Image 1 (cartoon, rainbow, N blue to C red):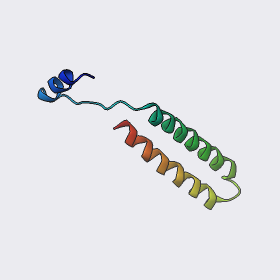
Image 2 (tube, one colour):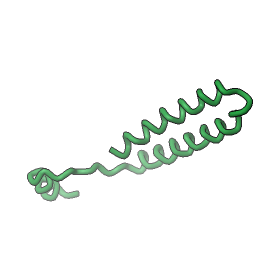
Image 3 (spheres, one colour):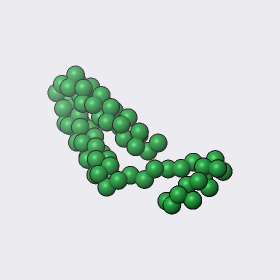
Image 4 (cartoon, rainbow, N blue to C red):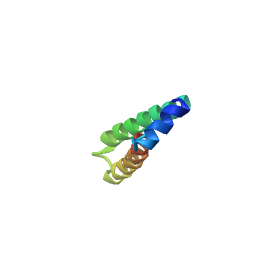
Length: 72
């Protein structure tokens, strides 16, 4: 975005969204992959150890919360 466009949007109180760098995009994809893996592990151990499943889901939810920050 060029400076004049940024200023126009700011003056007219429009929301300005920051674009992710390539590094941010790669980190986001990695976190999604990890979250999905944790959920798979949780399904796998569900019947064997309920506490392990709970822990894995807590980790997946923490990662999900971090992913939502990227969307803001």
